[in-house]
Structures are given as C-alpha cells and as structure tokens.
Image (tube, rainbow over all chains, first blue to last red):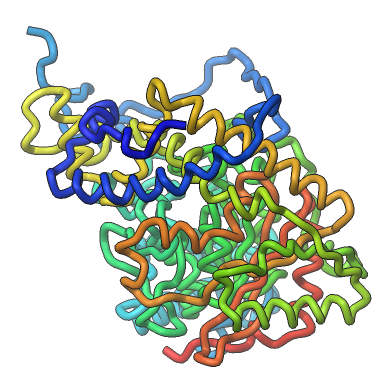
Length: 96
Length: 489
C-alpha cells in the first residue's frame, strides 16, 4: 500500500472537479493523512485468494424487459434546472 | 387530547383510529402543535408541508368513515429523512447543493406509505448527504438531543430519531449506511431497524454508498417498527439490488416466534473505548435473556472488530465520490453564479454546494479509486469485506442473533467531536460491520446513564430474518419499561 503522504490534493481535487481553498487544502491534508494512516492497518490482513465483494445482496445479473415505459414529463424533468430556455437547459458555450 | 397522542406508539394510535376515538386530522394537528412547541429547540425538521398532510389526513378519515381503511398505518403520520423523495416536496439532503430541489417523483417507500394510507409528514434533518454521526454536518443547523439539548442526537438520521423521541412524530424513516438509523435511535432512546441489504427498495433514496445504504424505520416500540417495515419491504424492479423475498406479517411474528434463542456475544465488542455505563446496561440485557432460558455463547469477530471501520471508509467514500459526481451544477442543484465555463461550473458549484465532510469524503474516495491506488485501497477493502461477511456468516450458523452495544458511548456534546473526523468515525465501531455484511440490525433502548442519557442495545440477525430479530427484541422490550420514559421538553 502506498504511503499516506502520497495524497496529491491538487491532482485529486481536479479529478473530483472540486475547487478547494488553500485553507481547505491544509486542513484536508492533515485530516485525510490521519485517515489514510489509519486505513494502512488493512495491510495486515491476508487476502490471498479472497474474492472481492461489491455488495451483500444475493442478486446478480438482473435484466429488465426491453419495453418502453413512461418517463418523466419534460416540465417535471426540467423543473430543477438552474437555467433554462424553452425546453432546454442553458449552459456556457463549450465549443468555439 | 394532546396527552393521549404525544409519545403514544403508532399501534396504539392505530387502535384509537380504528375505534373511532381519534381522527387522523386530530392526530396530524397534534403533531403540528407538538412540533410548534418543541422544534425551535430540537430542530428536527427541515421543512413541513402542512397543507398536504392535512389533506391526506382528511382523505384518510373519509376512507375510514366509508369502511375502506387500508390497514393499520392508514391515517398515521410518518416523517421522512430529507434524503427520501416525495413528489412535489423539497429534497435537500441537508445540503446547500439541493437547498432548492423539489422531487419530481416519489421514492418506492413513499409510494408504499401512501398506498397504505400513511401520511408523509415533514422533511427531517440529517448529516449532509447522510455523511456523519451527529447531524452536525447538516448545512442548515444541528439537531439537538431531546434528552439533553446540549448533546447530539446521533446521525446521520438525527432528525428522524429526535422527532420520535421528542413526541413530534410517532414514526419516521431514516437511512443507514454505517449505523445512521441504529446509532441515533440508541442516543435518543427509541427503536431503529436497519433491514437486510436488498429487503427495502432504494429507488428514490439519494445515494451515498449504494452497496451499503438501506432505508428503515425509527419508532417508539418494536411492534411499531414491525408495522412500518411490513409496509416498506418488498421487491422492486426499479432497484436492481432488491431481493425477491416474501414479506411476512412482522407484527404477527412478534408473538409467534418464540425463544429461547441462542445468542452470540462478540467478545471484541466489549473492549477498550466502551463506556462503562453502556457496558453495564448491555450486560444486564444479556442477563435478562439468560434468565429467559436463552443460550448465551461468546463468539469472536476479530476481523469485523479490527478492520470494519477502515474497510468502510474506503468502500463508502469510493462509492460516494462516484455517486456525488452527478451534482455538477448543470441539470439540477446549485450552480455557481461566478462560473465562466463548463469546467468552472463543475468545480465552483461543487465547492460552493458541498460542506467540509462531503468534500473530505469525495476527495478520499477519488484518491482510493485513482490510478495506482485502486488495488492497494479499494480492491483490498472489498476483499476484507468478503472476510468480514464470512466471519459473521460463520457465527450466525450457530446463533439466532448477536448482541452488542449499539454505540460505545451515550450522546456526546455538540461540538465535542466535530473537529476530528476520525474520532467521529470511531463511534460507529459496532454498527458499521453490519452494513458491510449486509445483515439486519436493530437498536432498542436498554437503560439510561446516571446522567439520564439513553443507552441502546444492538441485536444483529441473519439475512432476511427480520421476523426473528424483531421477536427477540420484542421479548426484551415487553419485560422492561424503558419506552415509557420520555424526555422533559
């Protein structure tokens, strides 16, 4: 397992699309360092040959029938949009 | 009238409704009156649509008058943690990100409540996005513990627990990812049940950690929890982890499922860090079961005790970082007014919309999933999770249930642990492994500290054996008087 000091906050914050202030970076570096140090204890467990477990439900490969059903009406789907015009969500231009 | 309603179990209120001695309208009005009297101090509610609840109460009374009452919960108000969707109602997750969000549809549990005639009443405070153990991470305000207003109600379903304890609502729903129903139930002196993963649909529950989240009831009695579970449980094609299980009559099972039982006591759950008064109360409960003829056997869960919290904080944060990627400021939720381009909308909206604990968990989860760290952290945690589940399965082969404290400490002071995330995480030490293993767990009151704070007993059952778990809890509750004590507010 890597060292807790490997946490590169700028790199990870960019991956998470989350802007952090300098004060948040200082605080998180300390707090997350503590937590990463704590989880290092998992290195002690012998996991040789153990299958990883994604969830505890005894349900696998669930298929839905390929049948069209009702969806949200447009007005309901757009009700929470931060900015809208007609039946669309307004966003900044992304292509020059 | 009010005294006959406040603090009464839902089953008792249902009997009054059925006998024509109470109307749903009067009951709902009594809940409003109690909330107006105490909630400026308890602060359990984020919001409440009184008009919708009154209309639903009148519809219930009309059904009953026509001889068409739908069952025991018809006309009973049920509060919802502000993470469960009710069409046309706010859904804030106690986050600035969703401060103005209105649900476009009902969660499956909401549909089931409405179909049973129950009245969704109130949006209850919580730790932001269900991340926390004290409800102090709410972006709006902390909730106070009704037994001592200077202390936390637990979390993350703190509003759901405090509202029941304070007499504001007879029943509420919460969600439990690492203890978020059971721990606040313990700290507020009520009953809280986390069902087996897959028993209750998660459709319409704002996701935190999808492989761990379950919706469950908070109630004044085990019987009430059984009634509410019977309404919300069952297969739902809209949740692909939902299990095709028969839903038994849980209330009928309380008397039908008889002991004596074989109860396991995990020795590691009574070690360092356990408050002596909590330990003594739980051991008295254990003695009660022994005197009832139950076979008490010491069992060992070394991996769960030592590694569950570390495993949880890798898996839960990884899932959270993925689930919360949807809050991007584009389609719904907070959008930063300062943003200049698309990337800016993401990074600034999320910076402005999320509180510190949510940001910490997103960062940690993103880190443990990132290239070069995935195998060492996330994959290893998933393997340890398998070992923890196997460990529980082995001890539950020979035991009907396991018995432990719910929380190592009674309600702590507001502000006491909020500066130290790791110290807060460690308060979930007895509940978190139950989510990793997907098992059902219930917390019931088992006494008070010398200072008058409630103490919770946790019982852990076999997968999908809620009926057995509730019967074991009911046997203890019936022989004790804890549920008849109420906080002075």
